[in-house]
Length: 380
Image 1: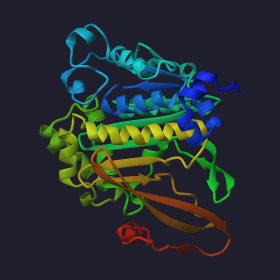
Image 2 (image 1 turned 60 degrees about the vertical axis):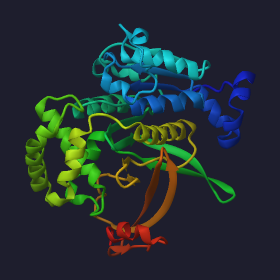
Image 3 (image 1 turned 90 degrees about the vertical axis):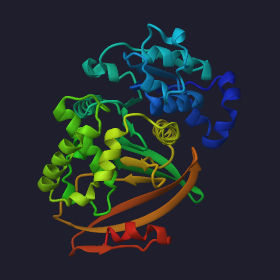
Image 4 (image 1 turned 120 degrees about the horizontal axis):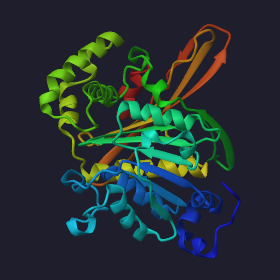
């Protein structure tokens, strides 16, 4: 991004948020370019958030027609057939987004995103995809990673009352305030393919059940040649069979993926607006942090389930080699807030690895909050 300063008009329009994250962060936002694929309800919420935040441009890709299912959660589409007749989802949403902030350039790119070359993705600072098959997620993430510059990559999926976000920022450097000083930090993110390839038995015992359930549904749709969301309760026998096979292969108990959760994901083909608002809000916040380079980014999965109102962040990465000793220091912080009518409990797990030459030591720090005791127990 270039070093152009904010214009007087931009400074006046974004005055309040400049007071929150500073003029430099706003300058970075105003020069950023975001690519978005899959215009469902959650993505519509995300787009609204980043357009209001003042990014430089948003490019939408979705050649599908407007359907009743999309109308149920996408507030960018008015229930008037005359307004969207003959237009694609991306075109209809583009028209609505322009009204939120005329200073943000919103455009449409037509075509199958999986056929776009690597250089196409190089035009953007962040790529957000939804409604994608497992194979398409891997492909687009690989293309973003081949670029010489860092392109932030996100997947977002919302199935009924459940949702997840995946984040890949490659080798990411950022700053955050600690007491009275600014600390420079660095994180290494694995690719989507590397992340979901981590053996289940290598994951912490208390990892979100939603992570496993989403992988089962994702693989089932891929094996059956289905598009995301093209499932029903009639598919339950096939899904349970696949769950059994995956659990046996990964040496994981089937109870880790409850039948009831799989049923909810199978029939949750429509999005719930309150859940869309929550997931879209979290995603917008993460993209803003990645572009501005300020604040701890989400690493690397976020899960939300409206049934219990909890949001959980999981760091799912390939375990480090055990040739040297690792000391694990775990600190669990609790953050609870209300959004969209739901009470959300976010549990952040920060793991710091210190390599030594002695024998392995593992120290579990007890949580200061009893509601986190089950998480701490999972690492003991």
